[in-house]
Image (tube, rainbow, N blue to C red; front, side, top):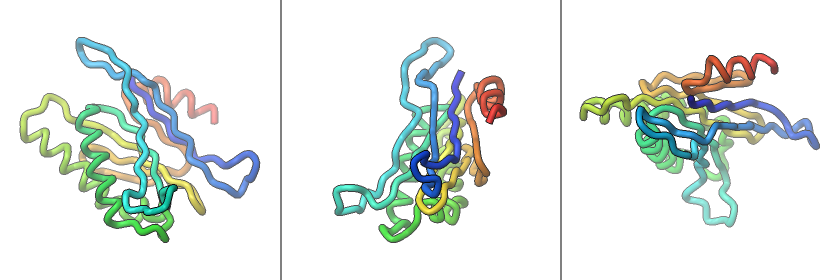
Length: 167
């Protein structure tokens, strides 16, 4: 069972600082094996010449890990080309969401055409600066901004929805 959760919240010390909290389980399973896997990745400004990147996104993935990793890599190169150090990551995430969905679909479609068994995946992308943003992206390119919370994975209904309903 896979579960990834994203929640918009704020810094306890300063209520005006938006934060996006991501949490995932750490197991990947196939029909025959289970292994540990990192389902959280950080996309950072590849062009930054500073010690600290000027922008960053957190990404959680569920589904085919190899295909999702490739989509995340392609999305990170796309974002590096489109976002400058002066841009707000949360605004950029929402304004580029259609193109991010197109990248997700192209990655999925490539493996589907090659006859891969089940190359489906889902992504949650998050950013926080002046405000917080969570973007849901599906393998078929569908995407939407999530208001406050979101969950993906095979455990979304049994685990995620029950946990998040307490919030």
